[in-house]
Amino acid sequence: MKLSYFDLHCDTLYEKYRDHNCKTQVDREKTDFEQYIQAYAIWSGHGDPPDTAYKRFTQIAESARLPEGSFLAVEGAELLGHDLSRLETLKKYGVKYLTLTWQDENAVGGAWNTDAPLTEFGKELVKALPKYGIIPDLSHASDRVFYGVAEMTDLFIATHSNSRAICNHGRNLTDGMFKILRDNHSVVGVSLCPAHLREGGGADISDVMKHIEHYLSLGGEKTVCFGCDFDGTTPPPDLAGPHMMYKIADFMASHGYGDALIADIFFNNANNYFNNKG
Image (cartoon, rainbow, N blue to C red; front, top):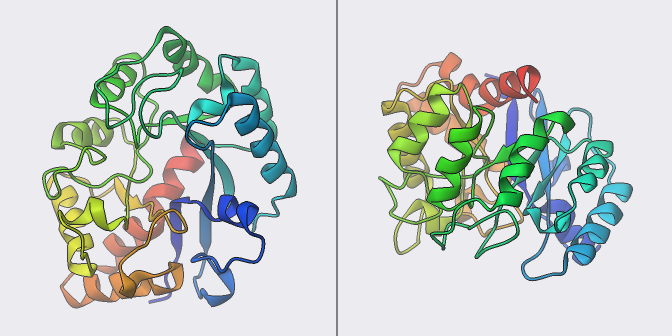
């Protein structure tokens, strides 16, 4: 079947900003999808001053020429500093989600490698985001930040997070977290970061399928999708760009997955979510 593809996370624009001449994993000229929607996340950097991150965001966003249907996102709330008015700029450029944390702690709260909760500013931010049409993304968040946000709202996603039951990494979601996302009719993007696919690395398509299958076993047929993290990680060699995602679809088809479920995971789940809430 002709495949449509919706990917919740890549770092391509940031990499192009760093080196205009670099070859990126996301190369739309290589793809042959019926529809292809890509979320282009702009990273706030790690340890950069808020003003530096904010200026970089505006520079990248101003020069971005996105294909129809694709949109911008922000990875890491560092660019806000403590200034919620900067959300108006994110809205101006069509940002649809904000990944609250990346690593360690920021003004919002703790990332996956900490036990820090939402700060008071973080709570203000979560309350403010719906006004700007921006969804909080809980990939990279600490467990306490995840549950803190879940206590405040039912509007949140996990754009690139695998299953902790399959690969015991702090960046991944527990089954309980996944069920909360499922019950909120949200979406979870499966990532191709090898360290989050298989403990010890060396991941391949079979490892990606283990995470998909586990999420499906938790009732995630309308929840699971892809957030591959292209240009933000080094994916398994047999999945080195969006143009190779057909291999997963072919694998699923050859193992008895129906066309409707494949279409949901590859496109419909994410597309329906953002059409209804994004």
